[in-house]
Image (tube, rainbow, N blue to C red; front, side, top):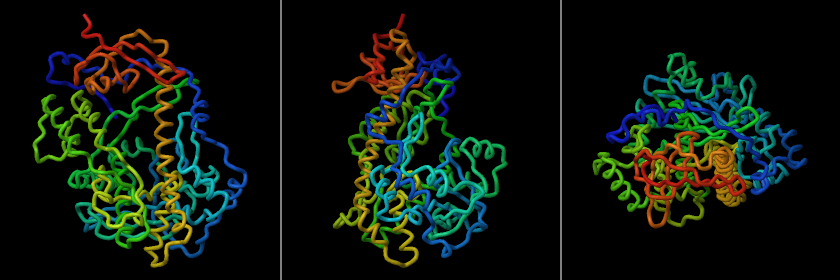
Length: 495
């Protein structure tokens, strides 16, 4: 996210347009993430038998797949990624768009009941740490034989989605296919090509598609937050914090995955019975009412008929007021879980919907990195082929859902621990130093104030009574790597 220059209506904030500029001195320090791996029991080494299974994996459906190596697929992933789950081709047609989305077919190469399957069911997902990943599958598979790397034929679950001129899906299907990616891109490359008008033919229609789908999401009531995301990255032999850059290309590509997940959910709901949705309850009315009061206090106009997602989308994310509201909006997006359709006797729409997306949704697009996707993809493939869902899916889906719930919680804690450790280590030499900050939430009787420090980029709590939505100077009181804690204090305006 780019925090460039900004202005506000407050006279105290004028002349502070450099607050969010990231062209500041780089603060880095050596950090050892080994303790976090040990604390959360993250075993990087895969059992020998499971590695052997991965090395010997063969496509169980070879020879029966439809050959779609004629489609010029490309991939869009972070620069260093090798576990490439998805490859995409989208084109404009006379009636709208045709999207082809190839997903690595793990269900075809992992033998049910094997050591590889058992280990994956324990791990649940890939954990991402700054110094290296703890993979769901052995890298010989996830970064090799099953990855949709360019220039090689790969087994895939191929989604074909026809859309109208508003990018609303009119038909969709999924089948097993053989595909070949032509080229891999990262998000910055796609954004640069879009800005220059030089996108490859496979992606020329992506910006229009993405913008239409984002607008459709707002119409559904989708909620998307643009808070700064902290990222720990290497800096020589040390580590530093930065704000994770996010481009329009990230958002366009995300819409491809979200659309596919919504189509998968529709397939499972239409066939009833077995299925696994990613769900989130609607935000409590009291939370939205609280946000409306905050918006009014900040002088932000929010008409009664405008949904919260559309209001947030219309804010200038570079302003303190927007940061305050988006920070408060995180309280709207809680309770995400995995819902087994077989466990719902008489499901209500609220039980089936992911409120941040505004529709029923299923995880199906990242089987190399997430256990659930192998099961849900297999369900959709079976329905598409008109055959029974495989018994290993029927018998293992509940366990897969439980594993996802457990490992999601662990993954969130690991992410937070890595950032907390880096923050405390980088800031330790600067205890007693004043920092420029913007106040995201004022203090209440039950919790301290929350602030955003621009350099290094940190979201933190702060003692005292700093005024919400204002620029303030805060002092670093504690930075302890052993406990992974930092603490700021506010004593009032500096004179």
